[in-house]
Length: 339
Image (cartoon, rainbow, N blue to C red; front, side):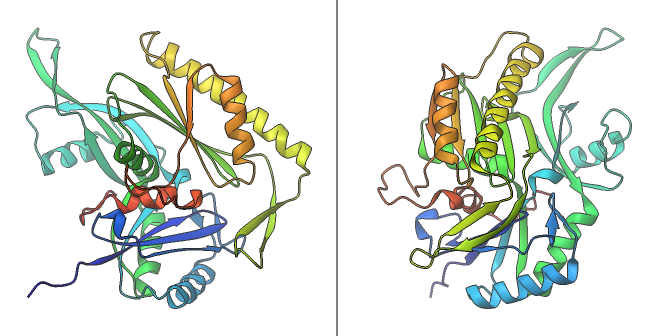
């Protein structure tokens, strides 16, 4: 009488690893499967597929190994490919008209460093009022544009389809992580949340205010990943670097300086001193994530938490930290394309 709920695979791809999490719909308490696998170095660099045949073969083997054939698939656009722009559009535009307006304005009032972008628009529910040159009041809507290179996005979706997956939605990781935070914690629209994702080879900083993403920065860390080894007992992945521990600790200190610059830029340049960061949320899969968290707490006189992977506020079963972004993607639901 009732069909089985659809199973979804949520894929998070880094330059060095692929992680999948399976759930039904957008119900993350239905998580059935969580798996990760190191990605051979050189297949993907800065989010771009460099070896299409190699990545296709890797994905084909992974789909078979993980048993995820024919699954509806959601995935994140690699952070290094995302371009974010704030803009305004006339408040009387609805639905497809907004997309048409954006298409017309790309290259005019909206400038992107991409020749052929795919994009998604997020906008605030309340319009604002502006007085134009003729002294007439115009209602305008504040919006955020997320864009990525069409060519790169097609590579991902075509390879997923070729290995018997059904790509239905692409998303922005910062939005997914915030979605999970919002799911697990009470958020205050007046507060300003900075998310610092310290990964094996990059730092991602995103800032949210009034449930809107206001700032996004992706930066490759100045280090060389030389490979990995898998622990026999736990099957966990140990990431191996060319650098020694002293150099790795130096990278953490450099990241502290970068965070401080971003916080000052947000407070004084973007918000003209009217708003500042009120909470820092740390996450990531870097081997030194706990040291990074401790340094953030020491460095900044701001409430700081380490985001943990739970499926609900009432849950006491913690999911490993490398799957936190995938949990945020699993909450997305629906079949709309973010890109």
